[in-house]
Length: 194
Length: 202
Image (cartoon, rainbow over all chains, first blue to last red; front, side, top):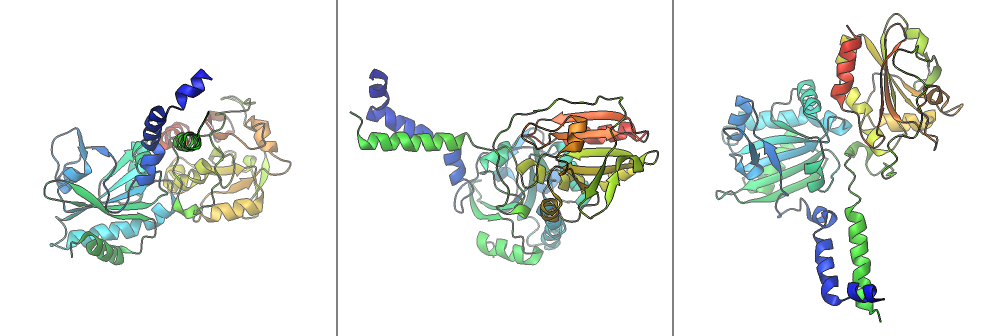
């Protein structure tokens, strides 16, 4: 009875409630909301010179999304094992091409993919199979996938990066890739780039 | 005396804490929409292998989703074989395993290997499930009746009637060269299978 009395003291209960609200599921529920911020996503700086140049990064080590040299970053959470990710891959590549061919956009919009539950080998297999031209990163232990709320794949996140390197999510979308040009139009509209 | 607000808070904390521990560590493709059953975390393995590397692989004949009978012996002397047992249709890890193999047909061809996917589900269930994966290049076989007979021969039938998540690599002479009875909750990394194909394909 003494123990019960101790647990149910209001102050203790409020502390427990705060801890519960900070628990993974509470964070997951808030993950990837439009207008919000990205969860902590730490990625390795690519070894490839081309990919480093594309992202505007240098050196080695790790980076966070707002360090990418761009006004807008599109992140695709995918899996090599996901049929829709495979089906959408040519269209996503086309989106990259459309952006790269537009001199007003190619330095302002960058794309990356994060392979949820995929090893480096599996990500590389996906990249080679579908000739993916933008950088892909493995998330073998689901760390990023869990931080993003265990979304179904593919999942698209659009992030607007300000000059002071602060950022906000302007697009958070489960699948439903509508094709390269409609998706680009949506990105331009919702990010305010257009 | 326990007051009502205290009880409410305890209830909320309990719910949040239990939900917090339910993160899955699995991806689910949007291809399956909301139709994947979540069995929760299962005992990693639950059977006793009846074969070993170096043994002759037990022969079998099973019906495929497309209606053909497929026998192991029909590949003897011509192809290396990968048997991929997955526990059940419409479950999380299984639904995101074969679609990965589906995009590496070239690797199997390069090593003169075929893939045979096997579950203990019946043909209509396998038909509906595999249709969500796109067009599969490899046969999907039903070990439904007598229930799990082939899985039992290999020693990968679990006590609840589904199979282990298991890979067997069999060479052209019909000899088992690799066995991976994997933790049922996790997908075997692709690189392990590719390495074994490289060995057997030489």
